[in-house]
Length: 456
Image (tube, rainbow, N blue to C red; front, side, top):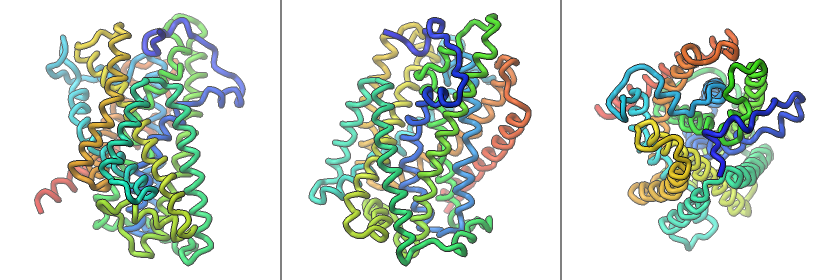
């Protein structure tokens, strides 16, 4: 049985030289898009549009485009260094008790964020169940929630990257086409977009009454902190790190590393294209249809309110279409999200000294075990609090706090541990610094919002 995390030398391969050949090596973008283009887009993005109208369109673009630089540069470090995500974080200074010789404080911090992340996934599982309930009105939402969680559990228990990539490709295509269809149809209704309405979205206004929801959208849309993390594992399993190889004394190593880093950047670009094409329609439909119709998605009626983006543009016949598309979006988020997290858990156990990195069999068992159990835990959170918007907001706000940790770690790792022959350009590093500063400010805004809400 092969191990994508340790068997690197036997798979060294020159990077594809031609543009067309590079496209054949893409794949992590498809899996991560299944997680990215999901709950944040369907639920939080549409809710922000329904609540604020077009005024925060500029903010949505910032949310989509401001994090891919971290995704690309952290993955570049992982692929070129041979570290896993948590092994890289464990190199950061500031040791706390844990394992044999202590672990970095970042590992404890990210471990504490694990529970809010699962809570947020509970909102996704519940939202998927509400989407199915639209198709089967007589079905009980709680029962459907556990059914959806059970199906995801069965898929993830197999632990297969190839199977996951194929499932995500179909689901991503399904919901992207359906949403674009609704957006086009909107132009032939009373809710059609106008130049004046879109112009208000670029006045760079930020009404404070929408701050908490807008910050949650920042944490959830685009490439969020969990997806930046799990993307590195999909890159490893795709084989990018194995193809680069470990032997840095090999004269061909620098060119090979730069070549595969180029493939990775193309893959990140594909991710950005897919998430932009799928995110903007949800905001525009929310602002153009739901805001005008005064529909506010919330509680157990969240998906019912969101369905009006389709029924008010395509007609009443499109309710089943929305149900299928919404289920595809949310279910793909569950499968891809927990698929990545299930690979994270055994890596935690390695860094804390519970598992040996070379113990392939136990690590694979942990991946399958966690993949099977985590969807059920998320379903339990939704059963306790059946409000997708609330649960997603909790997870998204925690994700916004983690983002500057990742961008700051990337800067430090590249400077301290990365081979100088494959360091990023000065312009890339400057952009990464700007992103880090911006994310620190956003994390501070989240902390202030939470404290302000607690004081009231």
